Amino acid sequence: MSTPKAYIILVNWRNPYDTIECLESLLRLEYRNHQVVVCDNGSGDNSMEVFREWSESRLCPMTRNGSPGAEFSRRRDNAPKPSCAFARAQLQGTCYSVPTVTDGIRFAQVVFIEIPENRGFAAGNNVGIRYALEAGDGDLFWLLNNDTVVAPDALSRIVEKHQSSPQAGMLGTTVYHYHDPERIQYAAGAAANRWLASVRPITDRYDGQSPIAEYETGVEKKLSYVVGASLIVTRVFLDQVGLMSEDYFLYYEEQDWVARMPAALTIAFASQAVVFHKEGASIGGKTRAFSPKSITADRYASRSRILFTLRHSPWALPLVLMAILAATVRRISILNISNAVAVVRGATEAFFVGRGSVGR
Image 1 (cartoon, rainbow, N blue to C red):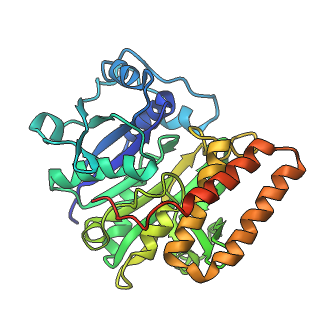
Image 2: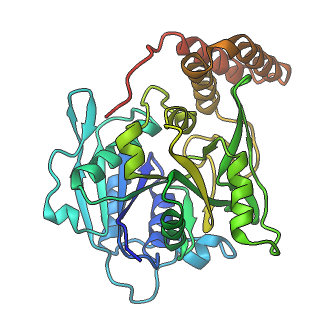
């Protein structure tokens, strides 16, 4: 079998210690033909300093006993110092990218790219993808949330699924809750309701009896998109679809990507590739204590929900607006006024975002 090159892209925003825990797990990947690219999305804090300390083996993450991090992410005794390189993205036209990919960067295990400003989740990932495309040797591009840890054989399983499903342009993995590691958060992704621009996570569990391929096919039939916490696209996909739309800032980027995907490409599920996700560690989308969404999460969820509808399902706009109104009323009813205002603000902003072009 061939050994395609994979680029694993993480976006950090003021959360360096979760990122390092993720990196520790990635250093244990059994499949070696890969490079990790960490894009610091204009954090403006000490994240880059922390990454330099880690790269020099002056910092080791602490993980909770019993967590997936404890099993996969603690630095092994006498582990060699990781090979790291640092670069700074520059504004070229309207988009940030790394102007020159030198050999010193190309052959590092981990590349840290400092982006001067935060333009959102899609823009941060696009910087990493542009870097990988400029390097010219990538076959798979794994967008991985920085608040995850991965099993050592995860990338091997992804590559196996890629090679057995050549028509797949997008692949997903099994994502478990980090703080409840027996519970599935996503079997690759979710099913979307275009009429309401709402989603339902797919959490189907393998029964242990039927063939794995049968289980994966069943999930694939339900999938509308792969969740961005662990999303793999192929070089063919990027050549035909382009990069993520940077107009969303947060949320719905994955759905927009799939909406632009040609019918000849499909979505595949690598069920044996396992990822553990903390969820919402940076912006409070959800938390381990299941507390309400943050103001930031509510604002951009509302904004992106309408923006996606305007672009891909304009006929559903009245129902989507009613759903957003209901969400606002719910927050007011529990005296969560700040979040209610955020929902309305985000919805209003969507109408002022141009149809926009996809960052390339």
